[in-house]
Image (tube, rainbow, N blue to C red; front, side, top):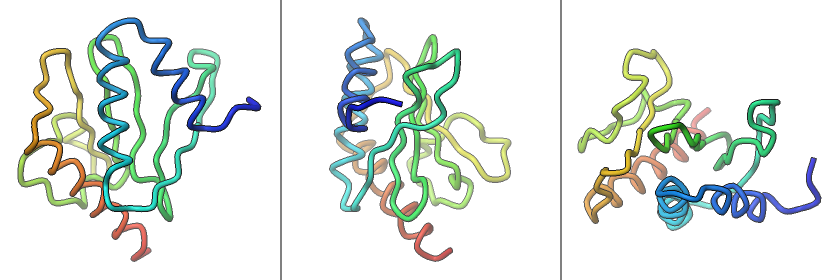
Length: 132
């Protein structure tokens, strides 16, 4: 357990990455936090292989969490299968009955349209959490 706030711990996770993945996570975090939802940042699931934990964004339940993988930064939505995704951002965990994820690769284009679509997914996930 750390004496630092969750925001400070997420800052440290971002700074630990010396390549494009830290930049991408910082960009995605900015988009997530700019969605029109009251979000809480948390760190969960500390384990031996990942002692710093996993960044999580919640609003009446988990909205999404971020994993830094070898070749991507993955945003996982635990209730993603129930979310409308007209721009087809979800590109991972598509066979799951509940979870959907978005893998952002080094060459992934996070343009204005995909930024708006990600914000919409976050807002919709927050509304879904309120219904349960």
